[in-house]
Length: 160
View 1 (cartoon, rainbow, N blue to C red):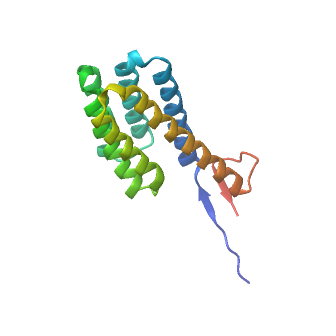
View 2 (spheres, rainbow, N blue to C red):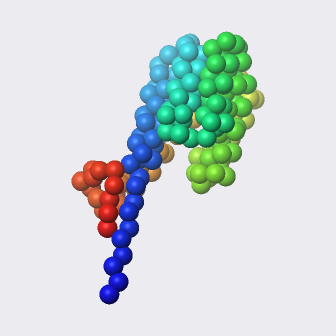
């Protein structure tokens, strides 16, 4: 007689993904609505993303990158294209190689190259990235929710 138990703890990962997607969605919409305040919106997004990374105990080096980029944008608003393009390039490579978001990773790197080559439309390119990132995360969360079979919302722990 064989009994098999599987304990799956994925509440924090799902919570982190939801917060990350909502932060990106709100920031993308604010960037489209108020492109003249890009340095405030982009800097705040990067600092908030870094704080979110710290809160969910992601690597300190990875958490420091958006915080430093956000502070640079606050101090030197004219460096928004360079700073955000560098952040997106690094983030795109991490998505492409580390988290298996290959399509979003490639799109992120392409948007980083577009920002570096065309800094005049940086607000719209940043908004494009943020909205693509948020929508892809929300779609992925919805697919995970549909495939899990547990549509009750459940708790943080499911034991089977």
